[in-house]
Image (cartoon, rainbow, N blue to C red; front, side):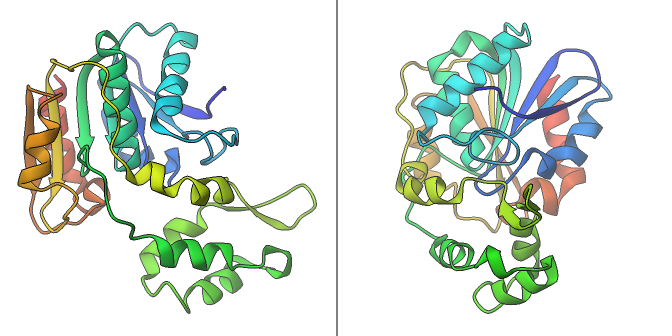
Length: 253
């Protein structure tokens, strides 16, 4: 599978992996900042953005996608940054292919099996009749009845585009993502211990990383450290980009 991507800068490679419902574009601002010193790739993971759709959707195959991407770009190793679902893909990749990861940054996720929390979003998106939608404004108005947060709606609507017939379609493979949602919530299956430097970045208002699940995650990432950015939630890099960049730039050197 050939993943869609954008690249910025030159130097040692960094690969950034987005989260659930996201795309590479969510990380473009951060990527351009890092590109002053690195060659930065932002990738659409399978079933997201402009990357191919496939019925198989789990962390093992997404780690394989990343391996093939690196091999096709003649990368023997890279620094990997992953947020949320992308963080689990990054952890899976690092424990499957530890020699291919120079350093690892995991943004606001642990190796934990989480309870659901996206059911309202799935119901709203799956209930949107795209055949009748004539504008993003109309789609937003319909989503607003179930999804009250304007920022969340705008994030989701970035996935809306027009097909060849002019009608709106989802860029992401929404049915397959929904079908495999429990898989995405579950823990990764570690193959090896990843012993290189690892940084977990936690949002102070987020509950995705706890003291307990960080300690269990460290069993396979023994050299992991954690930094907390206060007064921000799960979208650490979007809510506090300056502080986030300061932390990861210092770590990645």
